[in-house]
Amino acid sequence: MEKIWLREYPPGVPAEVDLNEFVSLRDILEKSCRQFADYPAYSNMGMTLRYRDIDRLSRQFGAFLQKMLGLSKGERVAIMMPNVLQYPVALFGALRAGLTVVNVNPLYTARELEHQLIDSGASAVVIVENFAHTLQAVLGKTPVKNVVVTQVGDLLPFPKRTLINFVVKRIKKLVPAWAIPGAIPFRRALAAGAAWTLDDVPLDHHDLAFLQYTGGTTGVAKGAMLTHGNMVANLQQASAWLSPISKPAEEIVITALPLYHIFSLTANCLTFMKVGAHNLLITNPRDMPGFVKLLSKTRFSVITGVNTLFNGLLHTPGFDRLDFSRCKLALGGGMAVQRAVAERWKQVTGTPLIEAYGLTETSPAVCVNPLTLPEYNGSIGLPLPSTELSIRDEADRELGVGDVGEICVRGPQVMRGYWNRPDETAKVMTADGFLRTGDIGYVDEQGYTRIVDRKKDMILVSGFNVYPNEIEDVVAHHPGVLEVAAVGVPDEKSGEAVKIVLVRKDPNLTAEAVIEYCRQNLTAYKVPRHVEFRAELPKSNVGKILRRLLR
Image 1: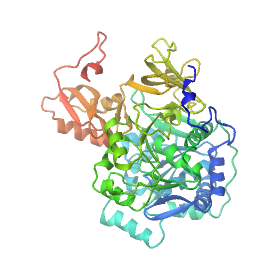
Image 2 (image 1 turned 180 degrees about the horizontal axis):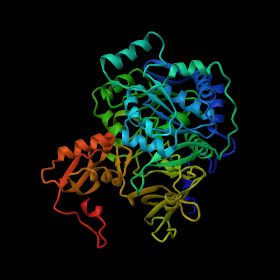
Image 3 (image 1 turned 120 degrees about the vertical axis):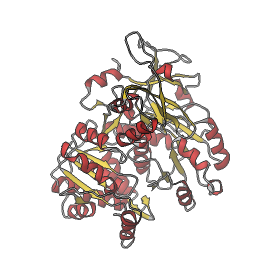
Image 4 (image 1 turned 90 degrees about the vertical axis):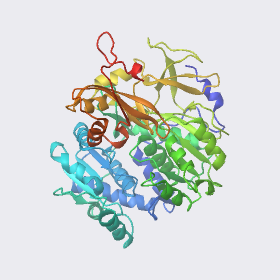
């Protein structure tokens, strides 16, 4: 498709970015650590690490992984923690050591964690001890040989560190009992690494930076292979898009979405690191009153999130009294931004809520609205520099401007493929190198992309992908269930919620029992909110359950 969207680019944003300026994420990090050494990089719980601290600590952790654990280039290291200071230290340490990072949702059940560790072939795990009991339950079935355990407050100064860790463990009782023989404390790992030199492992655009897991049509989570080249490209694209409004070393960024999520990982942790910004890591954004209290202590310039986060803040007492005088960007992604939320946000903060669009498979950014946009426009924006968009019909023929079809993307940010899943990779890649997104939309006459539907049966809960096959597979294992189908239904808080429709094998089976069973086997956002019992499910003539009729 002709790049008609280039006409709408803000002044100063190039049509193409320089993909060869950096050969790896390590290059970008080390440049930022030199350029912004004395500036704040990441803050959490009242403690700030400057770029020179990130340089030193990540170097120590990388040396520990190389010299003490003996990990070599390309081995996978899983990181399982919420937004705490240890996350960027562990992340950058692993990347600088030439390892591949596997981000893990700390709220995973044992079943979900076991699959991801086995599938990725992770050699080591870095985990916050609040979730160590889950790892303990499956560790023996996985290839993991080394476990590094950290407490929430480990990078805070003494005595605050001791106090916070005591409160979390003994007062709030947020750490279930666990025992993993040979587990290495995070602080001990840093101390050990300080005695060693980090080897400068050769890296280039082809080396894997992340196995970023996402669901799929099979219902089994797959690892999207994101190379250093993919990630460097997306950082170059995103920082070029930011250039009209951002100033190096001046931005204060609110990071409430978990860093293990691809949106927060690339947009907040990495892109804003590249421009020397100060990330405020929010460990528990669900505590909305506490979140607003934190926001009241800083005049932030950027906030990113999903629609539900923005909506939650707008409905929290005191939010409308915050100082928004420095706020220049509110960026929504991960799920559709609702017009009512965007309009209310602009009314309260004076800043428009800008919508962006991407996928795990695209590192993730594909389209973003101009950041100078005066108000919400209902589109997902313009394709980023060096990005091609194609709207295609079922026969893979390209359609024209205004025609509705599947949105397909080609660009340097598109993944290498799915880890050990050539069959699944083939399903989403066209012969000419475009990624099929599964989203249905069109490009309007100005070049803005608009989504009208989803081709996939995927359910989007607060920005997280939920795949019906995974839910159905879990529920079908319940001895009282004969047949089950999962669909998404509109939900005021989360955008969509999971609903299951099932046929009982046990006539005494209750909705409560099914939901409790799901809680034991699924992360909270995947657990069905609604259960409906039927005598039979609608099926096609070949016996396939017709989810669209249930929706």
